[in-house]
Image (cartoon, rainbow, N blue to C red; front, side):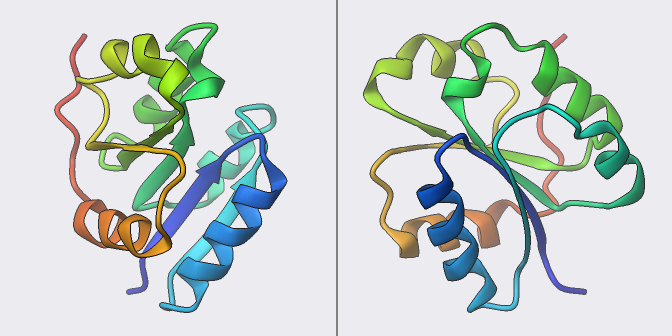
Length: 124
């Protein structure tokens, strides 16, 4: 079964480039700019990994916790800018890996292939 990845990132250029790279390797990709409107998607589709921009968690971790409650086996790969160090620390127990932007496409692909389907060690 092919790997399926949900990409949540507010930058359309990043979404597009990531989707293109992953699809070249037969990975199914769904992109969204944020958490809004995800509930029906999460109820109907299964994802092996979530590629999540740390900027979307600056207001808190509740949206990520809700996603993980719906899909506890989904690995979270956090993408972060250097200014997101506080978010990275807060999410360390919820994510499989953190990649600092800019990210080389091969590094991103390797991370997705390594973590897809892993069950994260979630802290309460």
